[in-house]
Amino acid sequence: MLKKVLFIFLYILWRGIAIRGIPSDYAPYVMHYHQLGAKVLLVGMGFILFHKYLWKSLKSIHLLEQIKICLAVLLGIILTIGLINVILFHHSSPFVFNYPVAERTPQFVFLALIVAPIFEELFYRYSIVYLGKKRWLRRLSVVASVLLFALSHMANVGGNLFALYPFLFIGIYLTMAYMWKKNIWTSIFAHMAYNLTVMILAVVMG
Image 1 (cartoon, rainbow, N blue to C red):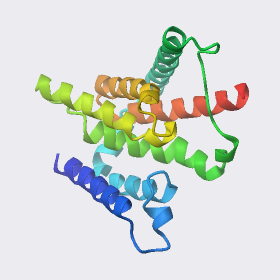
Image 2: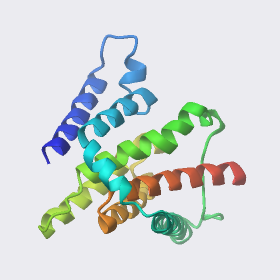
Image 3: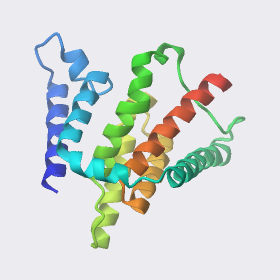
Image 4: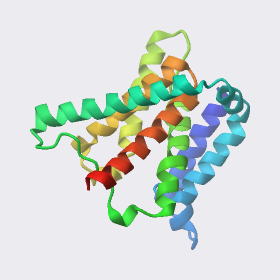
């Protein structure tokens, strides 16, 4: 628990410094939330703090079962968002995948497929979601996890709060996967699979 609190504190501290700014030529690369350097540092800190748990839980992963979970999460997210698009927004195409050409770089791919899923699952799921016996605390932590995860993607929707609903459902499904197996690698791999699928579909359908 103390390590989780420390990880959350380090993230909040870094966010505070990022907002205030630092007088350094390295600031745009190290301190900005959407830059690769910052998340690599946070992932490294996560591995240092949680290395025993991460190694033990990774060894308990069963490949076939993980594939089934990834497929279930993928289908759940895509179908849920597609249904909402049809019912509420009457989209001619319920499945909208956006992957701008300008972002199709090796750095972005590495960030989206490896670094971001590991960091976000360690922070929004492993560090925030409570898996103990207190039901009220479990529910509160799940709500906090899902909301904070969605809000962290505000830049992806140009500051439009209403447009965050896809990230809200992504957070819900990933949280369900984590709580079901109580293994953070379950949601990490599901997160990676979702990001990879969206990138592939965006290229194919674009």
